[in-house]
Image (tube, rainbow, N blue to C red):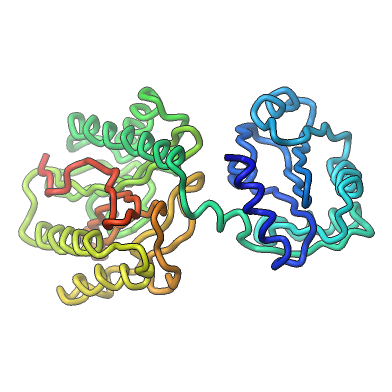
Amino acid sequence: MVKKRLAALREGFSLAGIDGFLITRPENRRYMTGFTGSSGVVLVSGDRAYFITDFRYVEQATNQAPEFHIVKHGLKMTDTIREVAEEAGIGRLGFEKDVVTYKQHETFSSALAGIELIPTEGMVEALRKVKDEHEIEAIRQAEAIGDAAFSHVLDIMRPGMTEIDVALEIEWFMRKNGAEGIGFEVIVASGERGAMPHGVASSKKLAEGELVVMDFGAVYQGYRGDMTRTVSLGKASPMQRKLYNIVLRAQEAALEGIRPGKTGKEIDAIARKVIEDAGYGENFGHGLGHGVGLAVHEEPRLSVTGMEELVCGMVVTVEPGIYVPGFAGVRIEDLVVVSESGIRNITSSPKELIEL
């Protein structure tokens, strides 16, 4: 698998005008090497691959990245990068321009004098868009932990609990049941706060008659899950149920429309039309979905700007929402794998409106 990824990366060298590539983004480092630690950079030339790290991680890197030459750096990692690049005969070194800071670029430019630094974008990310079966299984396991956490929290949610109480219960359950951590800060937004799409849990207390939006995901073997469900504390009002049903119809229509060859923009338009036709177009202000993998937000995008065609093996969220300021919010999110026949939905939590 690592050899295949290295070969695919090298295929892009010519187009990028480079003869070597420096990887500093943690997710890209893990994708290319399998290394799960927190420090190190990857340098790939046309025929060699190096992992440069410090004393703390040499043994771990040796075990986890056997396809790489493990190099322990000295006081300055940049000096070691220069030595390795010169050893590999690299004259034009690509770097991740959306990761390297201005200060880091200054440091690299000074330390790597004589080596031309070439800004690149998306070279490893392009490889990460399509998941192999190992990656899909890890994402499925992460989502299964999230499904179980949702079922668990339904049994304990009640008026008087704070949003933070609910978020901590979700996180605790996921960690206790196999999660390495949480994929992002748990969102719990109740009542009027539900109108904030990213309403991170607050000290607000849940109240009878409110809708509660919960968005969360576990991490399993480095890969993220991502799901959202909206529930009602007590019997939902006619307006709450109306909003919920519109969002559910929009999501189901989009799920039905996903096929290889369709663009993210086309799928976004399916859900957006349902919401617009119902009179709530202005209340759906974010994209329909995004890729998920080692990061919770990856390419491709299901949005008005998503021009990329979907292909088999992509894993994307489908998460339409309606947000009415001063009243409530509703979002329903599933995680799906694009397949030849359409999708494989790996989120199993029920989607009918649950009244607790």
